[in-house]
Length: 98
Length: 371
Image 1 (cartoon, one colour):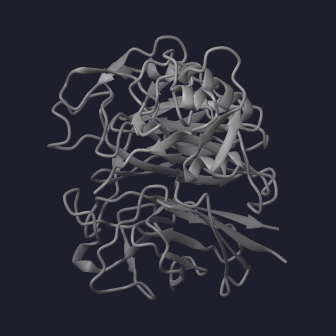
Image 2 (image 1 turned 180 degrees about the vertical axis):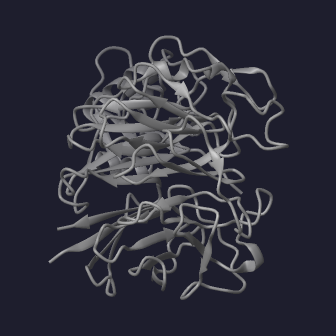
C-alpha cells in the first residue's frame, strides 16, 4: 500500500486522518497514485489537480524522500521507498502569503 | 414560533446565526468549513433546510457544500464547472485577450420552485445550473455570447455575482457581472441581452452607449414588482422600471454614491437600502461613520440610519452580497462588514445592534425567515 499524507484542509474534506493508504496497480507514478487517491476519496477530485487537464494546482506541492517531487513528470516512477510503502508521499499546501 | 436564520460567509468559514422573531437573542454556530473562504451561502425558498454553500481556497480550489438540516450537517456536492464548448477568450486588464478560466463560485441562487435546482454565478463570469442538488453543473453558454470577448475583470476578478429570478416568469433571469454589466434572458437562459442603457457616466467608459463594460456591483428587486430593478453601480445608484431596458440615476442626496450592496424592504417595494462608501480608492465609509441610507421613495431622497452603528473611527467595508432582509412583519435588515461585525435591525433600519462583532471579514449575508 502507498502511504499518502494529506494537508489539514484535505483531511477535513476526506474525513480522514493525517495519513491515508491507497492501492496502486502497476507502476507507481504520480498520476497512478493520484488516480487511486481520487478513486478512494472522490471528494478530493479537483482539490489537488485540475479535473480536466490533471495538472497540479498551482499552490499544491508534492514532497517525498526529502525531495520536492512537484515538478516531476506525472508518469515518471516515484522513488522506490514511496512505492514500497516505506516513506509517505506528501501532498502539501505551498507556502504562500506574507 | 417564527424566527430567522442568518447565513454568514466569511474569509475563514461560515457562521449561522439564529433567533426568534424578536431578534434580540442570538445563537451563533460555526465556524463551518473553518479556514476556507465562503463566498456565499443561501437556502432554498421551497425547503429552508436545504442550504447551499460555496467553499473555496486559493490552494485547493472550489467545493460546493449542501445541507438538508438547516446547516447542522453538510455533505459535499459536485465541484466540476466546465464551460460549454471552447469558451474562447475575454478581454484582460492590459487589453489583450485572455482564456476563460474557472476560479470560484461567487453566488448561489436556489430555484424559487425546486429545492434541487440551483444556479451558480462564477469567475470567470458564467452562469451554471444544477438540477440535481448541486451534483452536476451545466453552463448557459448563450450568456458568454453576449459580447463576452469584450468583458474584462474588475478589481475583484471577472465574476458573475448577482442572480435574480423573476417570480412571475420562470424564463426570465437577470445576472450582473463585474465589469461587464447586467444581462437578461427571457427564454430560460438560452439567449441573453445586455441591459445597460443609461448606466454610463464620465470617466467610466469612453463610449457612453457601450452595451457592455459597466461595473455593476449589485442589483435587487422586490418580488411583487419584478420589472423594477435597483442597482448599486461602481458609482451611482440606479433604477429601472422596464426590466433593465433603461436605467436612471437615483443617487440623490447620498453622501457618496459609491458602494456595493443594495436591498429592498420586504413589504415596501419603494423602500431601498444602500451603504455609501467614500470612493473606489478608499473602501470605507465617508467620515468614518457607518451609515445605512434608506429611501422610502425608490431613490433620490435618502435618510441616514445611524442609531446603533459606529459614528466615529469606522473604516470597514460592506461587500456586495453582505446585506439581506427578512420577511417578518417588522422587516429586519442585516449586513456584515469586512471588520467581522454583523449588524441587525428588526425595525426596518431605525435601530441597529451587532449580532456578532469579531468574525473574519464578512463576504456574504443571507437571511432565511422561518415559519
